[in-house]
Length: 572
Image (cartoon, rainbow, N blue to C red; front, side, top):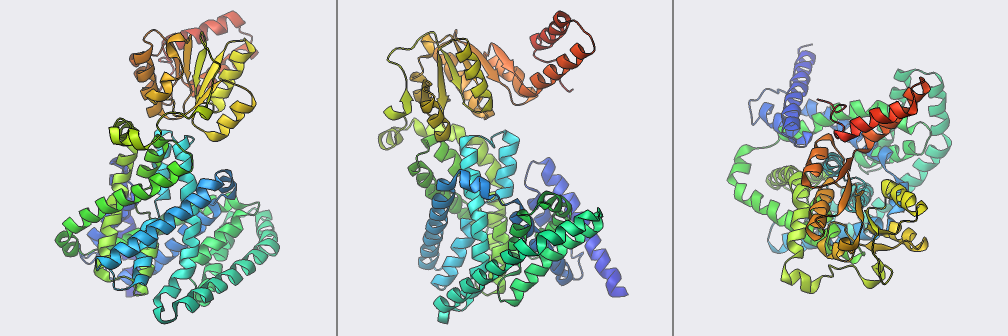
């Protein structure tokens, strides 16, 4: 009974500390897992020693890892992968392969590892980027639908897929005497397991989940989901593969059935709870003396890894036909070590592929790269613009739109320039075309540019906020500029450059947040439109008309709200 009481106390302390650590890092706008790591360190044996049995916590943490990989499998999107398949598949595997190769060679010749196998393992750990941190930062900046946002997500999706392969092969790496046979055996086991799992997933799991769902009992549904996750994970463990790979495959199976969204919604709260235990348990292993004694080395590794990964990712994206700026922004967003690298590193330590000291150095390095990622992504556009002005870059990189990317009549004037051809931009172009106004679109998506070519709409392929691109748009002869970009930073940069070229140009800009409305107006935009407010105003208009209000009175009310830039309806 005393052991049970002790375990409950330990569990409460870990969860409570995770809440405090997570809250503090959230207020500091840092990844929550940093808070979990620090809270684990503070309460662990090298901190205040508040935990009496670390092993029991680590056992629960393994469930957290399984649930992390399970939800990753459920969220895995083959549709997204197919949409950007070139950069996602070819580009991502190039990035992973080159990173593993460079890291293995560097680590071997610098004496950081004893043999090539350990170097390959270290390269695999470093090759992964953080889906959670990058996605969160893109969402906060409103850049999910930008071209660099889509490129980053495409690469991250493939890295998640590659993680499953790494988890399958990793156990074979600690058999160096017969490595080739061990890897072939691991791949064969994985293939047999995948085939068997998907047969089960196609024939048995859908009717089982349907039967359970028909009971309309949430408890039964979540129990069934977790049992499938952990059951398949245990099967992989018995086959000599990793539990994590089994959980990932279980997620892929559930993703293909009708009830995947419901399963994901039920599991996420449990995943987040147990994941906090996993990251806290890693924090408990951190020895401060090792980190302090090697602080200079850790900071050097941070600089080397973040610069090295950026230098690997940049040319790959650029060679796939994306602009210089897009390649810079994406490379500065993917140059950290990801949270799933913790999973690989822990497995590698258990398999003897990395020593305890190097494992702790890797944990410290990873944590710092995750903290620096939002900062790097914030200043990426400015860094790209600064680099583009350097003579060396101008000589070796094509910063201007290519002739084939400029689809313009010989002379164009009195036209409206539309920056961005997404959903908003397409509607603007359609409205202008119906009224016979000449239009010039600036767009950096190849898919959108192809559509513009097919519809014979004048356009320039490139980043709308780039000065060299704007020079091609004949802004001094234009009547107006509509900025419909999904990226707030690019919107502000474009507005500034456009007014420098044509100070009297009438500019209508799309705002992404309430705060941005005043900023864009003060910068010189003639009108600032906030799509969410406009949708709400239109709904209000329809309701007032339905209630019998006269149309002129309704329009008067809406015009008053727009004239003061939505001030009367903005939240305080």
